[in-house]
Image (cartoon, rainbow, N blue to C red):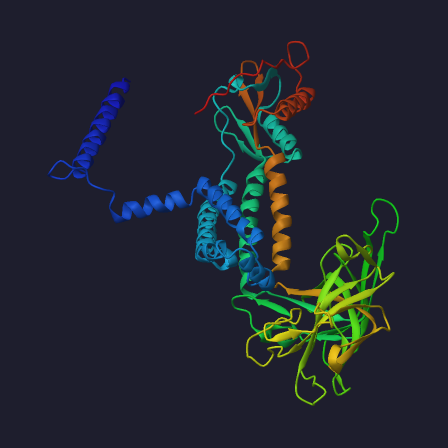
Length: 568
């Protein structure tokens, strides 16, 4: 009968044994010279893995990844913006070497960015996999049994009725199932029904983190196998999706020219409209590039418009409209009167009114004696000319009063030196500028149809007309679909984890004297929301309607004031 002393003795004995084992382990962790031993290689690896796979570490790494991406948006990247990066280096000769050593000109391929990315990848994997296994075990397990004292829960209701115990339990289980609870009926003992719902909350949490993990994979795939390139296309010209056709091309780490899809398109025309009155005068209303594209060599062509934020998608590649400008059409004749160069020359906009700069090169021109003497022109194109105290500029982006202002050079353009040279810049280091008889630089403003005659019979330039050009970005990312569905899943998982509440409910039926039972309904919500109290009241009301209270025909529903829940 008296088993308590034995239990106490056994507990004391077990405590003494554990204390002795603790002393032994403590003595093992102390060296003979009295200095404490370290964790050892295995212990340090275990500690490192636990620290790395903690949720706190994952959040810190995610913040570090966001901070590491900031330099990539502030400093021009050589892989994607080579011209801007070169210009940044020229304008910041002292700062550029420091940023170069830190890898700021190629952030997304730098070792420190890759280290943060891989650590976050491993941390999320170490967080998600154990939690998924734990969640699966939770789904396979039964809802927890009813506590011994349901009347201590914040939401509970109890009354006495005349009914069959098994019938009450089955009806209670049916009512809980209608409310989408997972139900288990336990007939042993006094008999109870245990129910639980809200498993979608943890599922949403896991879905959010798994989607974030998938999004990281998609970003890695896009960085490795994606391609991005830019191309400036004149009206009437054609672009073929080959490596030599691009002005700038940025392949992924594992991408190659063989992965480019065989399509082509032709720029049939470009139209732009601008606001002509009001405070928004000069603001663009629409940009439309009219294209004809073909998915294969010699295949049928299809006409389609391309607008800003409305790209054309061809075989997994997207063609975005980036910008547009003007290309004056000129004819350059040399000192022998022969055509040295003819066609449109693209000028690059410098402001919102499309004040544009550009160059014209005729490297094979000859002087009046027949000797090779290249000609080069540089200057401005003004769609709507305005000359004021600030000099030549454009007052409106449309070609209301177009003027081409040029100055001329002659000599060696440096195209045969073997060094790469931009088509939009003129290397005048080995050239001589034409001058007037008074020694001032030779320059002239031309309207369509005008002609510039160079001094000394060196040649001439005729302004024949105006064409437009459009710049496009051709991007291919094989992970776009994965990233899209990952983002959608992240949103759904976040909504589920925020708005779904996990709650439990119990119905206990205890037999009393004279074929009577004591029915108790209770619920528990870790979040402490009012919805659980409403569900308990509704469930008690439905059961009371079937099994009324023997005292006064109504259930004795207890609604005590909220009190702190006991933590076990």
